[in-house]
Image 1 (cartoon, one colour):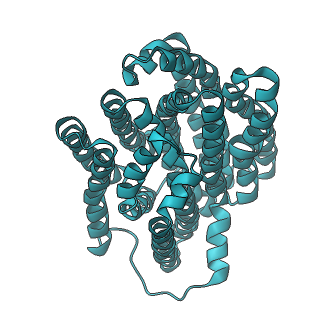
Image 2 (cartoon, rainbow, N blue to C red):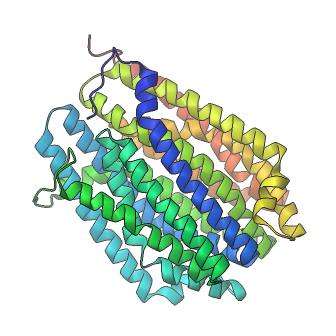
Image 3 (cartoon, rainbow, N blue to C red):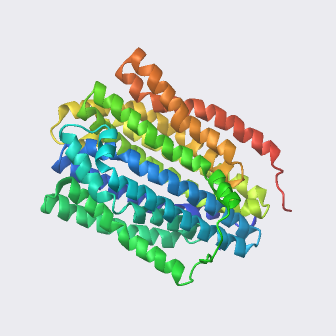
Length: 445
């Protein structure tokens, strides 16, 4: 359960909820990186570019899933904190049903309009077939992958991050083995890479479904009547996540089009490798955020404001430390990182090296901005959270992509994300200081 009190060390609370989540998500990112290494060495830059071109589709599905998941978890854990267990079960059941329905519709549309979507993603020439092979297989497994994400949110929210970690790691191990077999041994190319990832999500899905159906969870599936006002509340509480994920989908597509135009396939392949590094960082700060989010929401419902602010401070220190470390590594040794994925392609190495050094500046501030958005979601201020998320991941990035490349050339592409994080940091910092004054501190004596 999520029971917390002011006598328990805040650091212990933070570690107990965040560390298992961080480890699980880090291992997930590690497996995805191994995917990239297999693809980069066996298939080459066309395979790496194909992976990046399909990302907007995945981020669209993630946007829908995390919006409902985060919104449902926020309201469910607030209900648990207020001792309203029936209401918590309602939000749990409603959220999962909505996630299932929406993802089924999207996957069907994806299957029907596959050719048109592949073209829309910007793929052409040799890369077109790589994208179609990859997406053509992966589309059959997206639904299970999205439900896994929703399951893990609720499992962590009830205070069992270790169990969520176990389910995730089991799938990652299977993925690693199948990648080796399908890509290296059987030489199935992009279809093999997609099939390995798809099969690997089935085990965590079955484990998660079995966990909830056998009544081992705090949450229970209950019959419910869909209520638009409740669904609106779920969407509103998860709006920051929607903006964050859909923004990544849009900006990734824009980045891909610009890179294809200015640098060709090697430019997109370089962005794919840089994206792997960013994915590692994102998984760590997401682990911190996911770990503290249900605890903050629970204590907000229980009116333990002191715990909320102490958790916020610890989380910001943690993500800032991680950001500095990853910045130093990326800026000092970009050739090594790019070389892991690239075999004998000097142009890709040079493009990726310069791009990674520029992009790594964002590591210094994006953790703070991410945690700020999670804080506002947890205390029932989704509009403020949405503003922070929208600025850093969409509005500022697209604006800088339109303005900087015509003035500064290719370097303008690489500097868009760091500059967006700098501007967002200033605004998020002002928002946080303002809300520290608005919320009484502490509430409970």
